[in-house]
Amino acid sequence: MKNVLDLLIKKWFFGVLFCLFSITLNAQNEQSDFWSHVRFGGSLGLSFGDGFFSGTLAPSAIYELNQYVALGVGLNGTYSSRKNYHKSTILGGSLIGLFRPINELQLSAEFEELHVSRNWDSRLAIQDEDYWYPALFIGAGYHAQNVTIGIRYDVLYDDNKSIYANAWMPFVRVYF
Image (tube, rainbow, N blue to C red; front, side):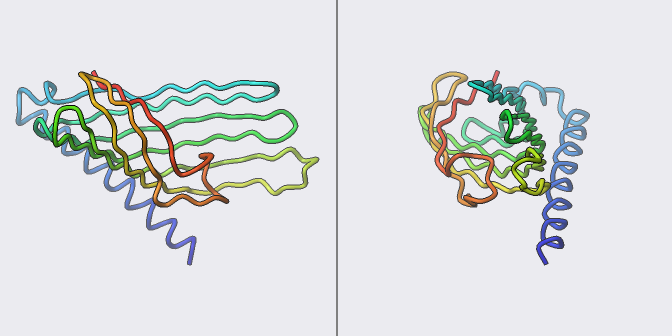
């Protein structure tokens, strides 16, 4: 049953991404000012320590429907390794919704679907993992010009499967 559910989630997710990109291409032909409503941004992460490395690249783009609402898509690529422990590759994407009821407050919802591939050191006798992990973030932040600083919560958080340390995460979001 879980495999069927995973397959349905994957098909739904990639179907929605395809529809969004199709709408984007059609909108380019129909509206000469389409690109004036598009904002690009994302995040870049780098973490390292004694025998540990993690690097993340997560570009995203949003389309501002009006001064209050924006919708978008994002991609995520992460590689991490811990000496004598594991190596992980994480790839996926997200659907983003932003709402600013007042200029200084940004509310957000983001559905993220990530493919996780973990290869454990053979001395640990842990079976390698290869699975899809969904996350649904609800967040709020202080917005000033192109930058939003806030906190978000993963309502689908699973202690055993999540790539994140816990369900609460601070964020900095920048769009140009």
